Image 1 (tube, rainbow, N blue to C red):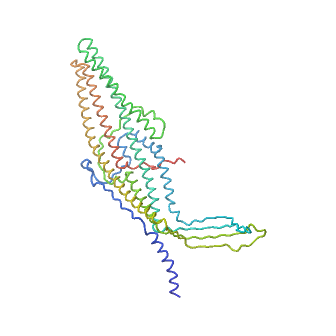
Image 2: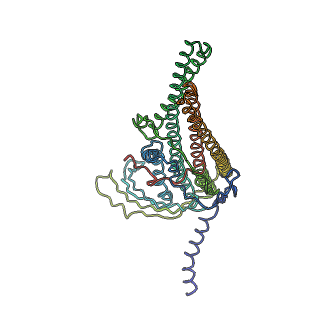
Image 3: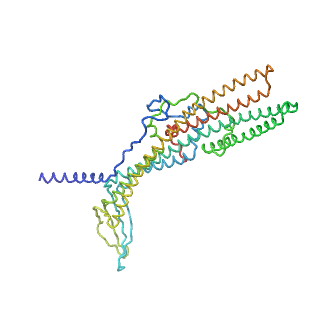
Length: 469
């Protein structure tokens, strides 16, 4: 009797262990993703340290409070980010209930059953219960599939935020740079007008030939035409900024000239290669690998029989008889339910093989995303360093021109030089300042491109904009 009792106790345990083994088998292997990032950056400046950097609020290095406030507004009001946030919320809700399909289900039903000889008709009330067991890796694969979809939505949201911050920064830099260029080009035009006036006076005095006046007129016309380019950039950038913050028209203060954002003495000090893991494209590729692994596991589980437990309970009453008939007690049944694939088994196997190839493709896409991120970061890093040298050189040239201009003014005050020489000096000085503005803007844009390539840095809190509800 003791042996029989021990067997009765061991039987449920063996059954439970068997179900656990069946639930875990056939789980698709999840590839280990090790991004092939370089240990050191080829284009990084000498002395760049490798420790992890805090990239929160990288745009603040541009030293423009208006840009900082504008980015905060855009993160809260941009419609693309809001769409991605809603999809993120939807994926999060679905992820919480991803495995609910494997929970027991209960169905209630009623039915009128008419006897073939039309002498009786029964009203049937019953309940059906079903519990499909998540065997052959279905439980784990369902979780992977749902988590991959959630991670993909999260990467899409982050990608929208990163692109938004980079685009707002780029448009703002272009706006302020174009406004400064317009000011300098206007000053050049004014100097050309004064130069033309002086040459016309000299022509009347027979001191210069008409050819000199014609050249001055041509230069003035070119200066007038050059004003159209920055004005186009101003209009386009202001309108795009309005779209980015989610409004119809630009703010009036944007159209008022302001200081140009610039990095100044900022230099790259830390750039660990593992920062690429924050890149949305790589996070999206990782999520796709996880989702593909989940789909492979589900397709493999679909090859095997679907096993579940079922139960049914029903009552019936004769509603066609003129007198009440007692139909007996309720009918109850329960037992296992097995769904075995037979004639479509080959199709299910083919589907599993296809999902295996899709998983391999997802891994290759991940590697490609990493390579692309490395290439963009290297390019931006090299551009940033070269443009820093260009900005320094252009500033030195502008300072030299200013020194020369001061000497020309002094000579004019001492009647040792003419006002015509002063106007030429002014034109040369403004053109040198235009070179500085272009160099500063190019370096700023390379800085934006670098941090976009590195994943855009951490987003300010709250990470999710408010819902439209």
